[in-house]
Length: 151
Image (cartoon, rainbow, N blue to C red):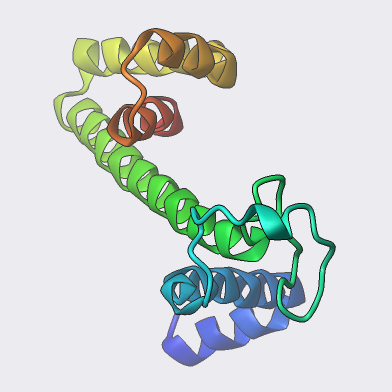
């Protein structure tokens, strides 16, 4: 399929275009979060629980922190975790698929049974349980998410 056909196919699906624009908007807003005039962790009890206004687009929380700024910085972390987990999952899935396809036979059967085990376990519940016993950091979270996303 040539480039023009792919572009035409992409633009013909309105939901794909809308989702792509929204994803790019969230990505751009998260990357530009440091331009916000407010510190996401600065406590200002004089402005606690304010409603949305011109100075605070989404209002403030119970400690007077700007909610919009905190959402922008939270988006940075969420996008980083999602992208990193996706990259690790692609590497794991490609490695298992390559080994299984190259070796074939009994190795392929063993690999496919491992995949079946991962597909049969309720992943979110298992991730929550295992994550509660592991050190709570971003690397552990990415590895836990990727460990069930590759299959």
